[in-house]
Length: 184
Image 1: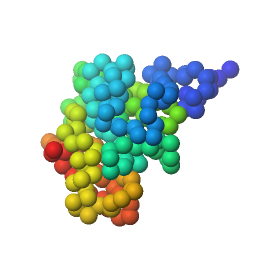
Image 2: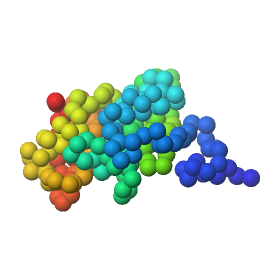
Image 3: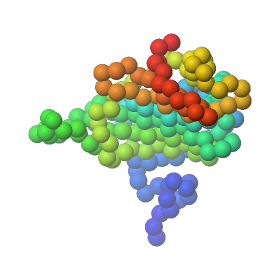
Image 4: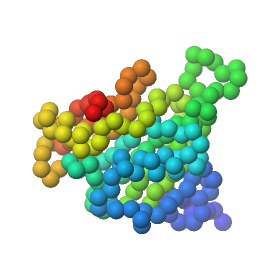
């Protein structure tokens, strides 16, 4: 028989580079994605021992920096990259981006934490390190620039480009989108 898909939490995952865990020990109503970052990194390092943060995507972020994972379609995605696994094999063209098994994804959903290795990722995404700004600080910067206030939520993305400092992309409905520096 064919194993059930691990994405639905049923059966044993067919892919050994994929694991799931329960969210039972998490505060799902006041989840702090920055506070969980070290745990996400630990989970990624079970797959790639030198994995470091390259990207975070969080939706439903409240002004207090937390996410209520029990309402709406909330998720938090962390991406990590291994420097060691990013090295192309000998003879690989020097003018081409190496694509390989160099990234680990950690996703937080209301009912599960899933971690998996990507088998087909560009291996040149810049390593960001830990954000300098808390989500509360990023919210404050956004509100100084006219972001909505009150009982609102937003989507926050932490990423970077080669040769540039990491940045926050902040999207808060209705109509507020800004790129903000990670300079706190």
